[in-house]
Length: 345
Image 1 (cartoon, rainbow, N blue to C red):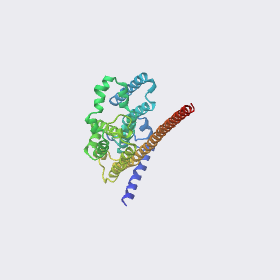
Image 2: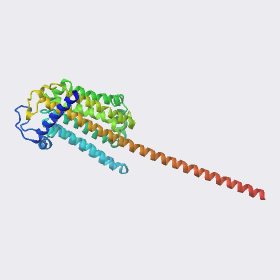
Image 3: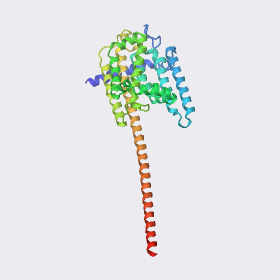
Image 4: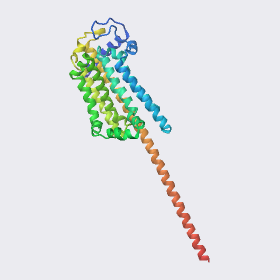
């Protein structure tokens, strides 16, 4: 009965949200609500370039490209894989989309859009950035003195060993997700721009910390096996689902900010909240499941390479054994021939 009620509550805001995207409407007059309703066009192309966000992203992209150029020039035989640069720049692009596109414009007007923003930061941008192996690039681009004096001591520090532990990273991510959605932080972020920016930074940092043990390309004080990585990621799915269900079954709006907006574009705060829960549940689980499938595929490729390498070592060992056996036979034959020659004399 409760499940059917949840499905009905989830279906209604999904339909309302789609209708709001596809049809024009008159916006409610409120300070935090844009004049026009959200649509596919203004969500995708309604960009607002904020220097506080755009300039750091641009600077980080330029630094990355310069470091890649330096490493490629110094090590032409082992260049930085192009896929890593694509992942890093793609992660920066996702951050820009989440914070400066139309999504950033409507995040304080609709909880559902805000949820999309958080999923982009934690489940898309963060794994892309970690997949690019930025620590490895820094180690390769830095001088020997810089690596010895700064980078390696940081990588081997006690703080990093604790923070980078998979259990700590897993719990930190879950704690940030639950703590932000069920505390005063979320509503404060909707009212105060500085708190909002800090919240985005917290979500991105938690995502980076969570995905670091999963991807495993950079040096890490705790290296997990492929089965452990799959389990680590798989266990995060029910946590995401339980959080979405908790939001979905809330009987009243969780955040006063959205409740005070009334019903912009025909969707109430409670229906918008249910839509946000549906997005977290469905989209979040799909992204987690896709990552699990990707990890299993990487695990199978690793096993294939390991098996092939083991087979090559076995083949070389067999060849060596045959060569030693042939040499032994040749020596015995030579000794036997020499003995026969001595006897004849």
